Length: 85
Image 1 (cartoon, one colour):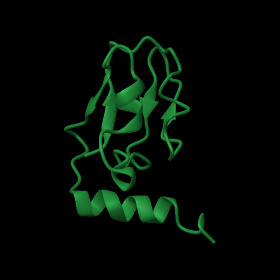
Image 2 (cartoon, helix red, strand yellow):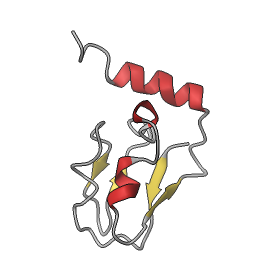
Image 3 (cartoon, helix red, strand yellow):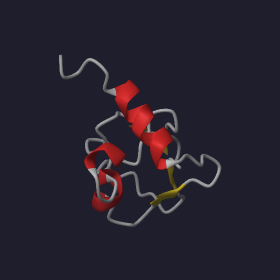
Image 4 (cartoon, helix red, strand yellow):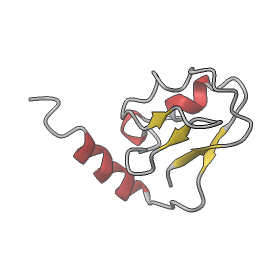
């Protein structure tokens, strides 16, 4: 499943630069994650990069966007297709 940002977000900007997919944008009043671009950093292994840097633990799994590991890996491949060429 992709991630979402909760109301605890303090709009500190820490997560924006950490997202390798550009899935995080400033919103009003909190930041937002585009579920079409969020892969939970599955292609990098371990905990998602945005979760690691959030100082208030405001980034959590989004139960409205459930995806399997296989689906997340495929999404990551499509997002990053052509980057290695």
